[in-house]
Structure formats: C-alpha cells, structure tokens
Image 1 (cartoon, rainbow, N blue to C red):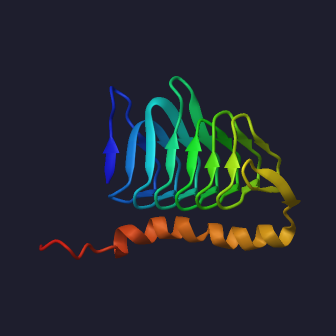
Image 2 (cartoon, rainbow, N blue to C red):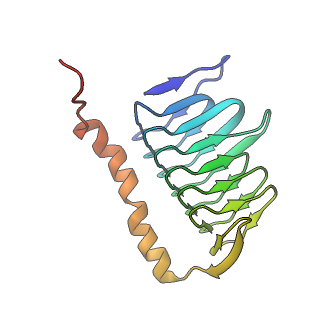
Length: 177
C-alpha cells in the first residue's frame, strides 16, 4: 500500500483497516478501525490534517484533502462513494456522499446527511441531519426515513467486512512468485 510519512507527519491506521495497494495515504492522517480504502483513493494530509472515523468506506478514486493548517474530519460509518472529492470539511456519522459528488471548504454534513450523486456542496454549505441534497449547488430535496436508514445500515456493513476479507482473499495475478 502507498502509505507515506511527509516531513515528520506519519499516518496512523487503525486495526482492521484495509488500504488498497494503489491507494495513497500521506502525512497527518488518522484512520479509525475497520475502514476500507479502495483502489486509487488519495488521502493527503501533507499540509492539512485528515481524521477518519471507524467503519468508514472510502471507495475507488475518492480524494480527501485539507487546506494548510486546517483539517477534514470524517465521522464513523460514513460512505464516500466512488470518485467523490472531500476538501476541508466536516462529515458527520452515518453520512452518505454519493458517487462523483464534491463537498468543499468549511462545509458541514450532518449525521445521516446524504449528498446525492454528482452534487456539489459549495463553500460553507450545510447539509442538515437526515436530509438528502442534490444538484449544483446542492439543495435539500427530502428527509430520510427509517426504511432508508435500515437499507443503508445493511450497505454500510459491506465495506468493513471487505476490509477484513481483502487481506486474506486478494491474490495478485500479474506477478510471478
């Protein structure tokens, strides 16, 4: 895996976390337990700080960064969909950030906040708890209900499970022993 110290800043990676070998983790990054970091993801704490909670899924090609001297904080049980960009913001527990979406500087996503695929949460944006936002710029479209939560709790269990299965079951085939 591509985990790098940068100018004395050393990533801390929690027990049971899986970082795919083509993902990159640099610098002042703290990652919780049972986190999945997929191929091509970049978690760059080179001049800002990144904090990621437990059981979060960081899917393929996600980019996480922070401004100089600032931080990005991602809670527990968060789903970061394929190809999203997370920059200098705070994402609450159980949030879902859809594929290809952008959450940018000083934005706050509340607990169970949902950013739809391709949406852009602009600077200083706020997504209230249990609210789905969509569009550019992202605007509220509805509240989530108990059925949504149950479905997503089932989905959210998949990636921590993969974090435990990958080290045992992944076999590279393009190299000779």
